Structure formats: structure tokens, C-alpha cells
Length: 421
Picture 1 (cartoon, rainbow, N blue to C red):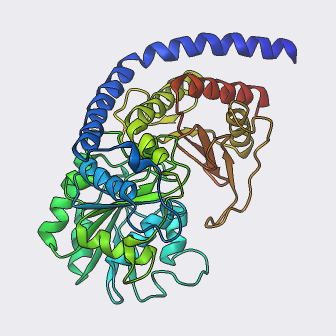
Picture 2: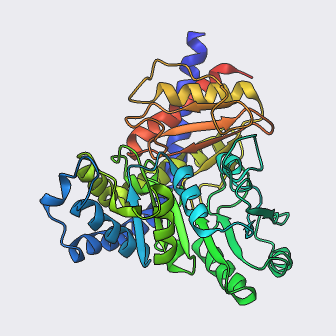
């Protein structure tokens, strides 16, 4: 056993060196994007005259929270949108997305997903999975779905047919791959889709689930025609520092409607204390372009290393990326469990814990998650998760520093080799 482990260590060291050399060109491209995004964020901070007094926050009702309200303006500037709503009261990305959808849709209207089935927890919020009360469907929203074409791309002919069959509603696009083995949408893809959709039905709203995609490119969906986007602060835009929360950005009337769903009609965005978290949210957003670049480098290295080990990785290390998610096709439950065990061992928190599949709320099959993170469930920190079902792919994301992310990837490879299945 000791000899095998030593041989594996020697093999991994050699393969890691080869993999890192293969990644050098991709790393340079990632750094160039990060530089442009950092400049855009800094410009928004300067324009909105950020000062230390904005960091202290409020308690109670949260009236007149200058820091909270200024951060809304900064997000709007960075995302190229009319307005934004950034709140710690959003419990996760699904909550922010669902508030935006409830705000955009009315009973009798249609939610049309043009990227196939949404992410698992969004499906339960819509009402197409599970048996939960208060879903969109229960409130009289019709749901329709257009599948992606065989290449995993938008099917414009099918989208056109579906749009002609609905009178009013919201078109839903999921930027990242979620738990599907398909390409993430680029901002060019989203721009083309927005122009196409509006040419057929200019009255529909276009919503983009932006989770895992922020700062991966130099433009966001709201720069290229999306009416509204939403995401989580414990992913890319929180920069590894925001302790919780989510954001919505887009057209002013849609953001205002979403605020009424987050709280209540008549109060909307005016309430919501920040409880001393403003500094972390500001600093996290300032760091977000760099931290996202670190996560991308970790993913690129993982793709190259596991390619050297004989596993299919999507996207490849030299492909252009549009989200931070890296898929490794492992092919068995045993390999998935071993991989996640290794990621957990390489974490700074709870490294001694062994991840096991369990029935997580909002999912329809057991899910295994490895995430020894400073912020619970923060997938901008190195994490790996997988639904325990065929084809047994593991989904890797995060790494707030490339150095620690690389260590975690090597741990995952080491544990996978040791499992021998």
C-alpha cells in the first residue's frame, strides 16, 4: 500500500508539471479578462464615491442604509443595468432567481425556458419537480420548455415556434451548465438569443440565471440585451468574503417588482438591515474579478491533469470558458465518492470530514458535496458536488487562490487513484 502510494505521488507530480505547462496560454487569457473586469469594478467604486462610513450598516428595519443603497448602484454600473438589488436577505441564488421570476411574471403568463430543464432547485420553485406549495405553477404561471439541440446549443427554430404560441411572459436562460453536460452560454450566445427573441416577441422579458458566470468574461448578460439577471453572493460576485446573500440586476421596473417579492408590496427595498456586513460585501465584490480568475485557473488545471490521467474533462483546458464549472466524467459512484473525499481532504476547513451522499432539500436524488469552506456552501471556494445518478459526472468549481485550488485537485486525483475502481 505504501509503495503504491509513493508511486502514485511520483506519477501525480510528473503529470501536474506537464498539466501546468499546458495551461500557460489559458492562464494568460484569464488574467487579461480579470484585469479588464477589475478596472470596471474600480471605476464603479470611484464613481459612487465609496467611503468608510458606508461599511458600518444598520440594524432593525434598515432604513437609510447608505452603504447598502450605494452597493446597489455599484452593481448596476458594473452590470450595465438600470438598477440592482443586493441583499443579505437572499438565502441563496435560487431565492434571488425565484424573487426575480415572481416579480416578472403574472398569473396567466408563461415562463419559457429555452435552455432545457433548469437547475434542480429552480425546477422545484417552478413546480415541475417535487410536490411543494407556493410554486410559480400554483400561482397560475404556465411553464414551457425548449430543449437544446443535439450539440447542447440553443435551438432557434424551436424557440421561434414556442414564442409564437405565447402571448406574454418571460424567457428563461441558464448561463451555466448546472448538472447538464452541455456548453455554458457565452455572452455572444446570449446577445444573439436576446436579439432573436425580441425580433419575434418584443414584449417578453428575458431573464438569465447568471450563477457561476459573473466576471468570467468582460461583459454580463445585461450588457447584451437581457432584461434581468440574478445570482448568489457566495459564488463569483461575493469574492469569497460575502457571508451570504444574492443580487438581482436589470431593468428598473423588474428589479423593483423583485424587491416587492423579497419583502412585501409597499416596502420593497426600503427595509433590510445589513447587520455590519457591508464591508465584506464591498470588499468581496472588489476582489471578485481576481477571485473568479483564481477559480478559472483551478478549473483549467483540473481539466489538464485529469486529461493526463485518462478522464474526459469538459470543457477542455484550452477551451474558452463561460462559467467556472468543470465537469470530470468519472463513470461510477465509487469514483465520484473518492474524488469528493479528496477535495474535502484538501480543504482548509473540515478536512477530516468524509462527504457522503444525502437527500438535500430541493433535489430529487441523493447529492454528494465536498466543500471545506470558510462560508458554508460557498462554491467560489473549492468545492465538488455530484448527483448520484448516471453518468456519474462530478462538478468542480471554485478555488479562491490557485495555489490552494491546485492542492485540492491533486488530493482528489490521489484519492481517486487509491480507490482503484
